[in-house]
Image (cartoon, rainbow, N blue to C red; front, side, top):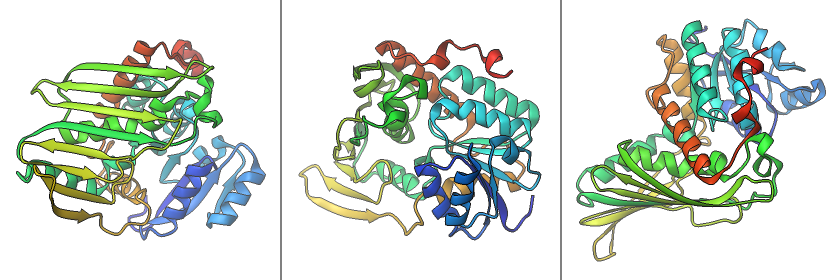
Length: 336
């Protein structure tokens, strides 16, 4: 792999692929090398629009290209396992869009394969890689609000009508598409020592979750309460409350500001996010840096954390009775 500009490829040509392409164009360490679609004409149109050198009419063609350094997987959740596995079997490093896979069983198989093949893979949950996410955590624990006790996190978008959200065969629902953000926000701030989880959900006519509330009780007595929905927009706020005040984060999906208030609700100070391209650049750069160091995972989102969260998502879906076709498929059959 080149130590200067790295050949990055995108597998998929949907909305999020376009957002990533626009980001890659502006990164100094990146060469927009290739894009793949199931249809050659779509790949060519995407490549032309975003300045990619090569257009592939199949995912297999992309995975087999010896010049690809890193593949960003931008297909629906239901296809992440299949497409990431294809890349790993071809020795290609993978940055896989969240949610990592349909379920923990797929995640375990994928991570084991990557380990056996000595191939890099990481989950593209962008908030984990953002410098401002680390700033927020520092503000929580630098004494400005005293000892933290409670966290709330809301996220919602009116996207329930979209096929990728509505259909179980696409691993739809609010949890895997939206819920991963408040869950990751809570775990980034309060950690992983969760000793109880309670939740409620509302399902659509296809049987997938469309909005829910989730509560974590931590071993130290802290609590995190999350509300997420695909039915409507909400304030997207994260609030971390302590003995001396609280911090209001304006958008947990891409925080741009954190405001500290004292216990009398008086504004103390506002911290702004540093300038960024889109926010996606941090996960790409972290992947490139890890590859240059010969690492198989990133420090920002280690494999163990990805796997823990996939088990947590499985546990919640089991509570709600939300089942995907991938949950009952034999992985051995998928590999044939």
